[in-house]
Image (tube, rainbow, N blue to C red):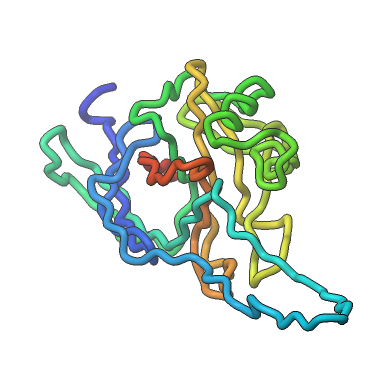
Length: 241
């Protein structure tokens, strides 16, 4: 590409969980220059844990149980961005101001260099491999199979590769604590080396799982079963459109 036609898109992550600077060059998703974890939390389960036993009594119990998943990690946050016309030394020829809304996708992979030119929908063999990596079987309630059980999502591009609508395994993150199917799409992609890329489509100031406005919610797989304590390193990539 001619230097005179080079267009660099630079976005600044203002995340609720992550913050950093992002620079996009060319047609493929690129990683942030820096990210910092600002906060992270998980649910603490507590309640009645004992009951008295008395000789001669027969007592009926009703037990309600909630188990925190050992298979998934969630991220959420907001993005602002602008468009740069820069040279190879990052000198700005011209900068278009912060966009009022940002469109595109956020990707997370355990592979630091996914094969973007071979990205496609994750197939059944790759789902089985991901289940095995995460320490679950396809029949487990929080397996990849049961989590990404739909095929409903908008069309989008990964670099120059089009992903048609409703073609990949998908699910949707909750909004205001309730299941929904109109926002915060989660899509499973993989490259030809079987690297899974967890993908979400950027929203614009939509209410998220906790009734706060945000631009994205993204869920990635994590294995903390059978003595695996984690954490798992994920590489983040962003493509603005």
